[in-house]
Every structure is written in C-alpha cells, then in structure tokens.
Image 1 (cartoon, one colour):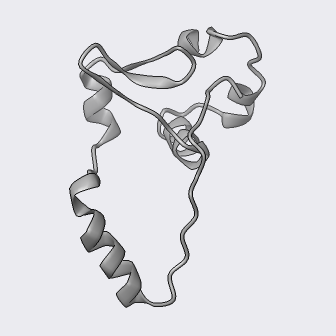
Image 2: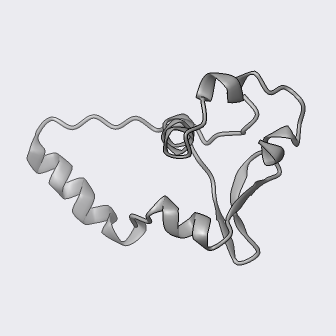
Length: 91
C-alpha cells in the first residue's frame, strides 16, 4: 500500500448507552468534514502519509483510505499495487 496509515483502535460497547457516553465524552475531538470541501480547498497527498495543505493535514486509517478511494472513484486494489515511495502523490 502506498499510504502509511494510522492503526485502528477497536472499541467494543456493551450497549447503545455506552456508545452515547463515548460520543459525549469525545465530542470535542470529533468533526465531520465533507471530503469535497477539502478537495476544493486544494488538499493533496504528500509524504505517502498525509492529505492536506500548508495550513493543516489529515492522516487516514485503512478504512478511511478505502472510503476516500471509493469517493474519488479510485480502485483501492490498484493503489495497493503501487510500490515506489512518492508515487501515490502522482496517482
């Protein structure tokens, strides 16, 4: 895979009440940002790990990069075959 991804920390909840409690405790760290807005802003991939611009950047976990590839109409299996560092920025 050409992108270095963040590991996914898996959390299991016993009930919906526990899910609601986790969301409430983490609301200040959560933000939903439409990918289209970031693309319009000029975000791009750099250093095989980051997606952003000079003002800020994001990192993806495996699920996130899969969803992004789908949104951009890119085939993830094709991206996974890219082996040379730096090649992802030119895809």
